[in-house]
Image 1 (cartoon, rainbow, N blue to C red):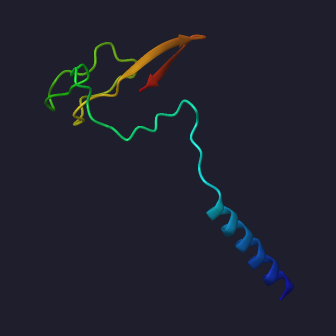
Image 2: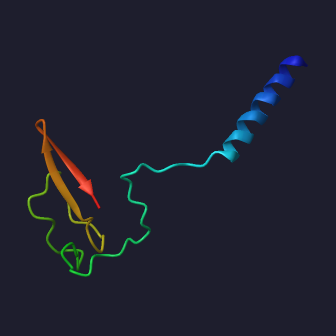
Length: 85
């Protein structure tokens, strides 16, 4: 009985603190809910068969997205890092 009570107490404490804690975002995390394409049309994928991004780092195929992410690349210590905005 004591073992069941301690399991229940542990579960209750975990559930209580889970409800009280809120998730935090990183300072550099983009939390903007706007997912529309930029007005400039720079990253537009107007049709399913339009050309892919020029000089891609990751080899991929054309997809159905209406626009691609606005991203920049940095080359650090022999690695290419992609920053998506």
